[in-house]
Image (tube, rainbow over all chains, first blue to last red; front, side, top):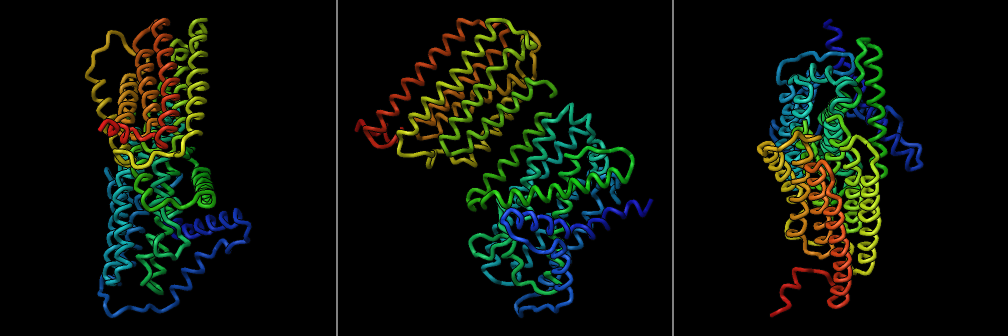
Length: 301
Length: 214
């Protein structure tokens, strides 16, 4: 039983970087390129872990703890999340709030370690990140609240195991609205294209990239790893709503969820290759739209 | 939440919120047209798809007017204009969406407190109809361009129509046809008026029109 419970965090650690490879491969196919290897993110992370870190003399211990804490926090969050047939390792009433605010904690540490460098450039990125996350957090919180109201449970484990095809028939509209809102949150929180372009190194367009510019070596490896873990976990929230397969056969449930995850990654790749990045001024509008969808889902139930 | 009427209501809410957040007038015209067409199926759905002659005829008239004639006239006006989008409305798009959400919550709360003579087909119809009326009014007061204000007027009418369909079991055909005719004439006149305003002043900013007298 303990193996079953720990299977999900282990899966997250092993497979999460692969998701980024799938997204990049989809984008490459759309652009007519061969693209990087599917396992490029693993190579990057290993390369970074073997290197040494460079620290500026103006930074303090905050700068060094930031990436480590971010990684630890995302790992903790992965303990709370069920996936397909695999139950969550830890589950209690109201753990969805802990789940959301663990990401808040991670963001806080990313932001203060960016501020710690004393660079005004990183301060700008931090300010943007905080602005946009202040708008996407209500969308996530209210969206999960809508699902909780729909299913009648307030712990992630029970909530997602109650999302069955029957619930889709009785309140499909609520689930569609929430899933759409959460997809926007997924794109915004993971710095994907309509909000932030993960490929740019231009001053005016980046949000997340700016904040981590001064991190190097293992620290940057941890940041990369926690970013893909965060993507995996937020993806699990969407999969938990949209793929209501609960056959009590662990293999079928988990492999269908895994396939859905790959489809989600391909979908993100398609969105990234078919859309342009929004102007920075229009991003809040998109996020307010996502919050509105969540509120509607909560009210309509 | 399971019947088609509820889905139409949710569609109505989403289109209203989109109208509040969009600046391109062409897209707004298409959305209002779509809203009208989808709404025209409402009497048929509320009658359990009993194809009575007058209901079907009524739906066909509404579809051809709201889905065909109005968008055609408005698009023709839009082509003549120098601008394609609403620039700098009195209330910004983000705030408009937030205001819309708050208005919707208020409408939900309000409809819980209203006593109705007979049970309604769908609990959502009244709040959503109210909300559509309110967002039409909001579009009229918060936008500057005459064309968007005409669209707000059409949204307002959609709301009134939904409200009427929900409350009145037997469609008072004559009344509805009369209202529809009024709106037809109104949109016709406003289309011509916008065209002439544009030709005279090179813009359709109603904000600046109020200063003409001085």
